Length: 169
Ligand code: DAT
Ligand code: MG
Image: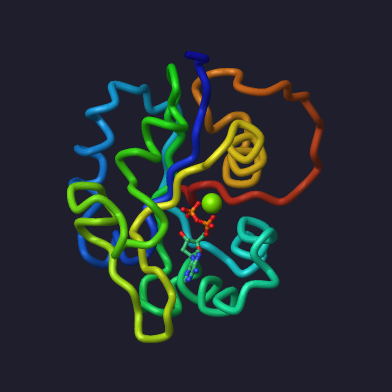
């Protein structure tokens, strides 16, 4: 099995329902390494880029509302990168299949997911489904400096841009 990286996102329902601990405990069964993690607000631009391949689906508008937190009054998500042998498959196995009704009852989606009356699958976590998808998604959600290993080639640039620093007392 190849060593590989995969992106996990604990979606707004996961944070709203205080399920982060449960999800991380389940994922620790894989013995994979966490090499990046953060809690962030998902803006529309990131949501649309992340789900660009689903743009034509009837559930797409609801999906964007879901991941940006508009359905839960909760715009935080937790993004994590797991690394190790067969990481993509191991994480998908614990996540369960896309439809929470069909997912293994002991999987994260089977145990904690539900189908909304609009038909959208509210399934608690995202997990990359192939190495190329993982690379695209990790590059979208993380900067090179936020990951504790050199996953993909990066380059140094001199940026003259405004950034936020702590204010002195
Ligand atoms: P996965 O998240 O298992 O990789 P996906 O990438 O095909 O599945 O879809 C992304 C998300 O969109 C999924 O987690 C939940 C929602 N979704 C997918 N198919 C759906 C459907 N047929 N009805 C409602 N929501 C769906
Ligand atoms: Mg997918």
